[in-house]
Length: 239
Image 1 (tube, rainbow, N blue to C red):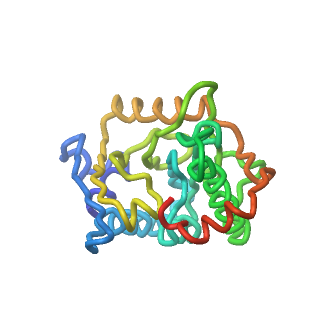
Image 2: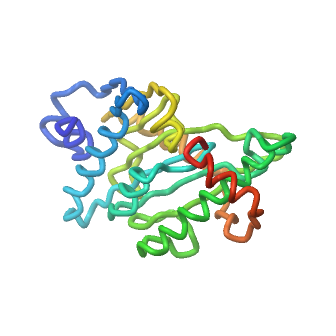
Image 3: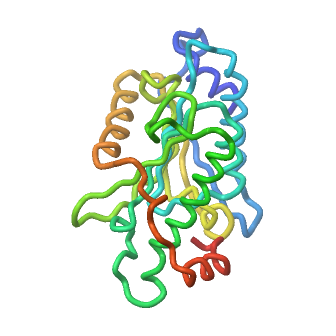
């Protein structure tokens, strides 16, 4: 994994020239069975990014999205302790699959707003908030996706060597990158690293397509009712 990361984040290297231009490998996350390949992979990824922080000319940038955004504490710590930029897109309440449903499930979009509020407070406390909450090369930004009549279920990670270059690595699969995926569900995902200019451009177009319908996060101004806070306190790890 470390050799793979070094080869794809150092364009023009001899290792990269001699390697296949696409490498894909599966990772399984099943926290209830203590199988944590996804966590281990992301931890190695952030360790690698930290080892490149001295490269002033290239500051890696991560794009991350989840329709059910509720990062586990481990994933939050990885992002907040890193000096690399992280641009996050989450579903707006109206784009959440449970929006407008009856009973307690109707509170789920509000529950995710509460988790987002807590995350953004942690971002501010860590001095990682991005000015005007827009993506940049060193801070953390949160945007929300909304399109009339659509729900949002995109999920994944894209890693670029710098804010101006297309991705060299992506993580895709079943994981929502949240506490439930990390600890309760069994998830199968894939990591793909590439040096192919054409494929990298396709990955960049994926990111641009997501951002087309994303606006700066507005959850800080949303009211979360006390009963939602109580329910999240009881079952927050299941969201």
